[in-house]
Image 1 (cartoon, one colour):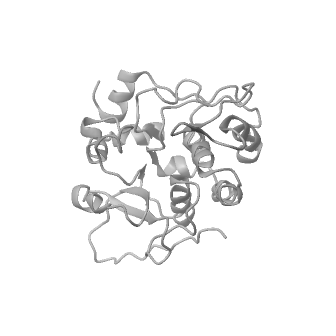
Image 2 (cartoon, rainbow, N blue to C red):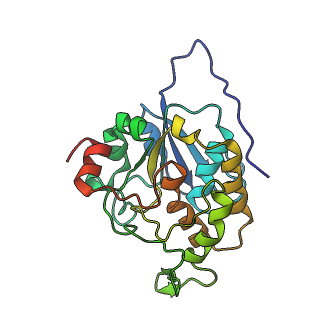
Length: 256
């Protein structure tokens, strides 16, 4: 079952909502009160992935953050603000926020410093600039043998990320069925996009991605990483999107 599109019910007498939103997927035990407290200039859509009694929730807990991200896009395709930031539920600190590229690994600072004009101009901005892990070729669909995913010292069983990416490419990108030799971008699925960039793909395309995520039998570790290394392509960039470090900081955060 697909997420249901939600109509916008805005009180015309109320103050205008901010023209940007932060989208998060969280476990019910995770505290996301920091969003409302420290980012009042942002709307928020915070999906609980493991409790369907919460007002905003995913249908099941599957596919890691990609589930919440796709649910938001499908449910709100006709009602996006101009800028949408997709981030994780933890605010800051190490190791939880190790992949957040600003002072104290703090997503509040990341979004406060986000260069909105660049997001609008480029359509997409990865919130991480440091290359490792991800660049320049984390995924190689034709690698032989394929690279096995190791988590906490244990190798994942089943199809590799390389294999799955090769298999799903024609389904996801029927307009460009040439499978790239290498796919790379800085990890870890925290990024901002413009409304116009999201809508360069049809609602039906996002529904294809979502249906695959719900139906696949590969592990969440693999399915989540499929999208981690596809968001930049979905949102208009080439297979390898690894901007030079200082240029990335200047573009994304307004500092060299």
